[in-house]
Amino acid sequence: MGDEAGSIKQPTILIVDDSPENIALISSLLKSSFRIRVATDGQTALRLVSAAALPDLVLLDVEMPGLDGYEVCRRLKGDPRTSEVPVIFLTARSDVDDEKTGFELGAVDYITKPISPAIVSARIRTQLQLKASRDFLRSKSEFLEQEVQRRTREISVIQDAAMVAMGSLAETRDNETGNHIRRTQHYLRRLAMKLREHPRFAAQLPPEEIGLLYKSAPLHDIGKVGIPDHILLKPGKLTPEEFEVMKTHTTLGRNAIIAAEDLLDSPTSFLQYAREIAWTHHERWDGSGYPRGLRGEEIPLCGRLMAVVDVYDALISRRVYKPAMPHDEALAMIREQAGRHFDSDMVDAFAEIAPSLVEISRRFTEAA
Image (cartoon, rainbow, N blue to C red; front, side):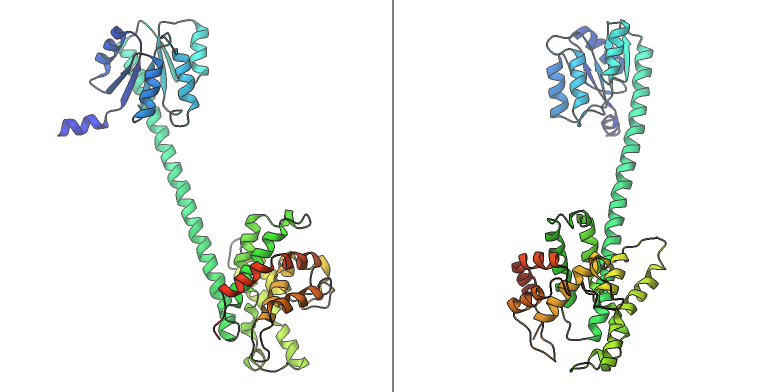
């Protein structure tokens, strides 16, 4: 049992030579230390490496009928599966140009016949040690890459969970908002994807940016946790004084996110869009919004996107102070505000994705 286990661990050498005498000589030299496979022509050698486990090293003659050794080496090195298998030419050709050709094709060594058993054995062991080192480093690199990908996925999931959890804090303060953050999150992503088709927005909305916008959207109303209940939960219209307090939720949200960013050792964080959305989603295209009265493209793209989807969802949602508005009426009202409250191009895109909006709202319908 011990001998069998040991033989399994022995490196495998593929000997490719059209001379039975050469195969017998080399096999007798190596069989005590290596597992031996043989092929007497190039086509057979290629079939062997494609149909079975890869050899650890190939000893390859140059002059053979059919495919010569150079062509066999070229094909081995051109196949991703076999490109890393070391090839040593073992040939009677001793011309410098022949040796140069062998190395240019990717061979790791070039041994001329008649061979010295000690030299052949030493060079094979050297190449196998180098291969083992390369394989170890490649395996280590692949493991580290997989580990980085795993950790990155974990961080992304944690970020997503943190965003939704923080956004849900605002929902707990206002039991009428229900699935508002989930609907607006999906509306925003769908609208951003549509705007990628528009030359004005295409460069600003690569897939990774849309992903960050989607993750950040749940925090747009996080500042409402700082609004007193008698204002936030008031069933009727707010007084001018109360509305001024309500408007501060934009700045409160921005400041809360900045405080979170300060804990991160990064000049720009995954919270950047969340901060901008929280601060600017009540700005208006004509400059009549709050908190800073920004106008037109002074308003960050993410704030303009959120403005459209936030108002739409508020219109179609039932509140204690109003009934839910039908989709068509809400969309008509959005279109009326193009160029005033909203970026006109965004409104056009929003109207084009109307069926998606209805499907999203149905998927995340709030309980009556």
